Structures are given as C-alpha cells and as structure tokens.
Length: 125
Image (cartoon, rainbow, N blue to C red; front, top):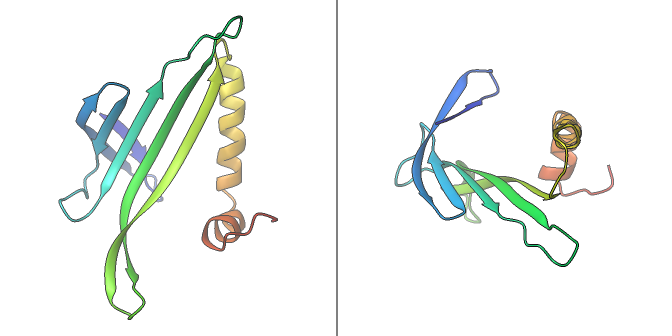
C-alpha cells in the first residue's frame, strides 16, 4: 500500500492491483472500469558497460480521469497522466536524489509554472 496526499493534505491510499517484472500498478479509491485512478511504478536495473556501472531507470506515473469537452461540446471522460522519471548512476547518494527531488517539487509548487508550462505549453517562463 502506498499513501499519497491530496491538495487538502488528506491521505489517498493506493493498493496493489498487479505487480510483475519491473512494473507495479496500484489503484486508488476512485478507480473503476470507467474512471482511472492509478499509480504505476517501474524500475529497470542498471546495465553495466565496461567501467560504467550503469543507471537505474525508474518512473512513477499517476493516471487520473477528468471530464472535458470534446470538439462538439459534449462532456467526455479522458485520462490525464503525470509522470516522474529518473535515471540515476549506480552509487548516486541519497542526498543528491533528495536535492533533485526538492528542486522539482519547488518548480511544481509554483502555480504560474503549472499554468504556463503544463496547461499552456510554454517552455520559456
């Protein structure tokens, strides 16, 4: 079980739905056959190449459904996806990982960044 927080800082629990190989899918409280509320974690082992010990590649994908208007102004349900990806050389310190995470969290905590970059697609903000 994984516990996340929503905007109101309330717990949102995700339970294992399926786990196989390098991928695990967790479902949240809103998940149904029609509405998505999933957290998908993947982790790929590093591949050594000569003296390079390789990189661990990991991702977390949050998939949630939202209601939007289609081209004919009909309300339809579509999935939105928020992904975090990391590629860490073997031996990366926890401190370095925490620093990178803090910087990304800081970027995402600025409302203007969410609007300009994620909603409007601007890359020069």
